Image 1 (cartoon, rainbow, N blue to C red):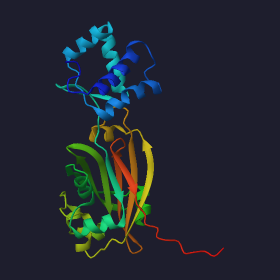
Image 2: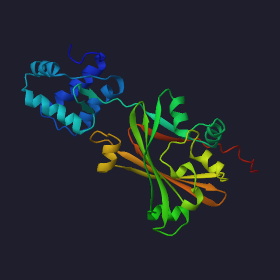
Image 3: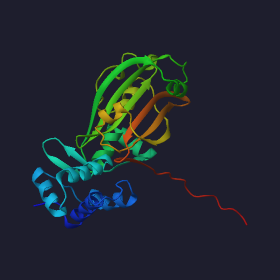
Image 4: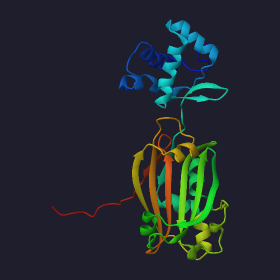
Length: 277
């Protein structure tokens, strides 16, 4: 069956998008993207070679034309090709990272890493892997946030975070070497109860976090490869500085799959005092 396993509304959406391309509509128009969007949200499809033949029969178009239509959708990041399996409408699982003091304190009390805890609470499987731990010259924006000289040596931990085996974040964490000397923060190991628990074992208590969001952009080649991003998917960047009192102790630079990871702030502002008229 053509597009087996998909619901009817999803089939219609994808075929409508193909129709726009096959019949010569400009593939980068909002109309084209809107046609396939419901398919991304509601269903997943595989298009085998046999099913491509059925598309040829349906549209009375040549196989090169059908392939061009599918390629146009792939270039827009709306479908993806999986080697040996076919083409799928992309349907990422969204993950919302909620930034609250209560979330942070609760996860620290429970001895859980914050990312892992939030992913599990949303019904998914988290995974963290160490890519590299190295001593490097501090990038200028890291040196400024840590309050050290530009180019001074820092310990850099580079990790990749995944959800349900799909990479979603590329993380670099920076420390002053004198602060973390002799700790697991210098070692290429994932710390079970999190890096801030390790800082506490060093006598450093994180008391404040400052998040700087840098916006969205297209990924560079390394980010695209490491996060396994399809064409057209943007990344977001945020830089978090952790403080112990007034002393900056950690800088975390995070590149996220902009289609999957979102951030939510929940701020309890309390009640305003009554003002007399």
